[in-house]
Length: 259
Image 1 (cartoon, one colour):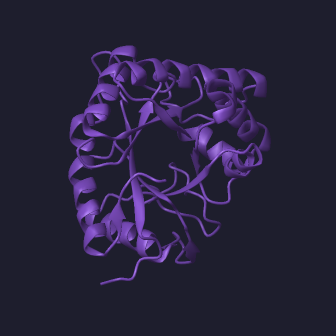
Image 2: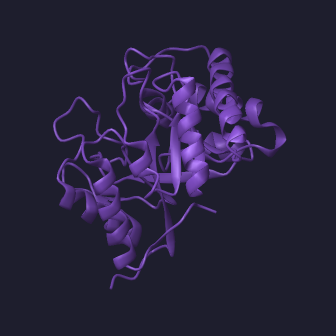
């Protein structure tokens, strides 16, 4: 048995990524495995009915609900970087959190954290203005109590969250390739998304148990994380999530929502 670097790790997935008759994620199946649900809030995917349904399912299963906020880019699935003025971006982030909060509360739960999606997530790794705007939006929506913010270890987003007195939660990605700097390999590059289930499971266990991953060029990279993400739009995502959870348990790492 591997001696884990952390006694427990959160397992999160992107959910509610559909619109109208279009569906992408197997929300019900994934909600039987993950401990945290990053719910699309309408800007890159997710309509009101989908948001309501995912919140109800998450509440029934005791899964933590998180607002996955994005640039206003429904056509591009939130994966196109945009130059949004900080004040406007803060308002849009608050708007998305507030919309999801209505459905979370109606389901008897609440929004428990915030995670940017796609291009916004990657932009806030190195752009202080956009990172600060996301944090300002969280503060606007959540008030003095604030909400935890999920982001990449070493990112300006997590630094801004800490500076604002928010809980900065570092996460790792079992199914994404890394650069030697610890950032995610851009999706346009070959091998950016891992599709081999065995490789994803092995990486997940290593990340949780050893706090490390091998970058695309073979460089070892430290990834101390409190949450582990699996993308809900990956084919066979629910089965893969089950395998990851079972493998983590077998390595002595408990899967539970981050404290």
